Amino acid sequence: MSTVASKTAALPARFGRAPRIRAHLRKDKSTGLPRPPVNIVTREFAPCRLEDHYYNTLQDDLMYMTYHHEHLPRPPPRQIRLKFDPNDPYSKNRHNPSVGGSQIGKKPPPPSTASNVIKLEKIVVHTMVKEALQSKSNLLGAIIAMRALTGENHKAGGRHAVDGIQIVKGKKSVGGWIRPGVPVGVKVELKGPSMYEFISSLVEFVLPRLREFNGVVLPPQSSSVNTPSAVSGVVSFGLPPQAMGFFPQIEVNQDAYPKMYGMHIHFVTNATGVGAENRARALVSGFQIPFIRR
Amino acid sequence: MFRRQAISCLRRTPQSRTLATEASSTETSRPQPVLSKKPKPRLSTAIILNRSPILTRSPTSFENAYYTYQARVRRALHQPFPYDFYFKQGSLLETRFNLEEKDREKASFGPTFVQDDYQDLAKVEADKAAVKLLAQQEGEGESLAPREHPSDKSGDIKSLDRAGERNLYLLLKSKENGKDVWRFPQGGVETTDFLHQAAQKDLHAECGEGIDTWIVSRAPIGVYKPPQSDPSAPEDVVFFYKAHIMAGQVRPAEGIQDFAWLTKQEIEQRLDKDYWGNVKDMLSDF
Image (cartoon, rainbow over all chains, first blue to last red; front, side):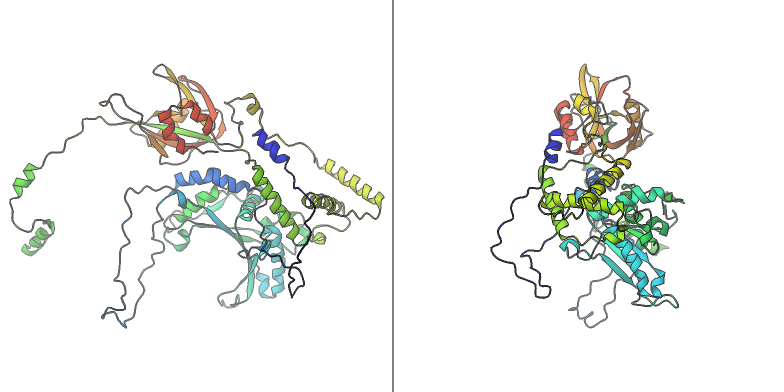
């Protein structure tokens, strides 16, 4: 171990003389800037502590905790209605009704294997700004705060799948409150290292300093386990506006922002089927986010 | 009434016998199943008590080179930093940030990359002195705790602080049939207990009450059937449970001679070959 540490400490970035430019790069017509011959993409530039924690400890434990033993292969799904066959003279030209009843909350989870252990896929941070209904310029403060908070940017680092800060627009018309197409909030999707970085600043700086926060409140035991929200495998909770000031990214110059914004945080996991919510909570509590029952 | 009886009769009739046949002849000739004389197996639980890594893994030289390269790419492409948003103009914090940023640029792109366009040498020296004073006030420059614990140097395998980057597991040494044997903590199961409860009890029985542990799952993570010399004796079945140690240290019970916190590779040298073959897949390689 000591030899590894000494080797790594001695590793410098080596600088030589830059190679002689033989052929100049083609220039972009619109900007006049040279275009690199390859797409430059930035990747991880530091080891990720919480990701290591997941692969070292959490993944094994969660596999053991959520393992459900099935000694026989699963029976094929029950065909509750005849399949629609357009060539059958009976069903030809008839209306093809959809299968009745919602099956979404009743599907069993996929069989437990080592390859589908529960995993955090992304975190969505979302904030609604009510004043944006009067003037959309009121969204600017929230956009600035979210950028400082998450460091996300549209197509940052040459990655086409990174959306950065997205504007959320109204979908429905609710009398005197919201209209379709009106920008009312901002959201950010965090994946990979930035997701783990967000968790660590949340758990180490924000939650311990929040007054009257004992944990994320669990739904009462009497609540249904078959609702779409109970089988989606997403853990959600909200933070009050004063919590934003506790993030070190915002804390350094809190006065520069017009105001503090509250936020909803959604931990999206790959869990599906009955009991997905509980498995997702087990994963999230592994990152030291507390849960309490009222 | 009669009709209902008839229907129920139909339901009960097995499909295979539709015609009246001599049923008695086939049923009596069927051989009786031979009941095994073997006694019930003896259950016991063993606990794989794990100390998770307490330090981040130090990257390999290849990983380090990769991270250095990616950091340079990122620095070359990043958007301009909004100084005026984060710092009051001319403040000491801004001066410190500018000086540090120059050092970082030099480290990324070479000593010739940054031009030192000093207008006023006296002011630069004053700035540097002020930043140095600020660093002293904030307590910077204090050396961090070493990644290597004293127990690593002394070879103390009982310390929980040893090998901070690795997963450690608890092994106990006890005397079995007049031989010293290394094994995981283990104990029997009483008929009224669940297996995971028995595991917790057995762990405390062998390692003392001075440890705070957590049994990870209710289901066992593995099973081991020790080889038996006497085939008529009850079979031994050992169920393995994973547990984490949160606090405290092992205080071995009377029958236990010694204990050690070991990595997977160190465990292999101490265990019996048959036992090792059964437990090796339950331990983390690193």
